[in-house]
Image (cartoon, rainbow, N blue to C red):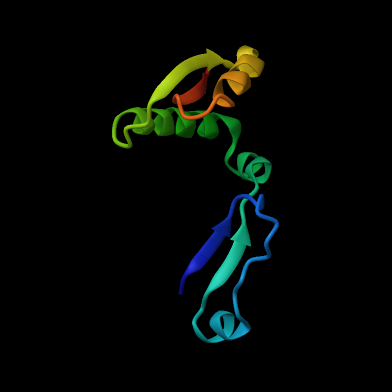
Length: 93
């Protein structure tokens, strides 16, 4: 009864799921594409979810936050994030 949701395909490898698993064990695989999800649930709900995820990252998950920048500074955010493991750069409204 397991379901694999594929978010990215950077490895270039095809998913491995046998037909007997699909037929007899009820396993499945599906894709997740952010633009379709946003269209389905709406932008306002996405913004609320992002806020919750950011708070969880800082508190429960212990993610180090390097900076919080507005969307207008996305170029700077990308440059900061590409430096490695100093911490996450969050885009905030």
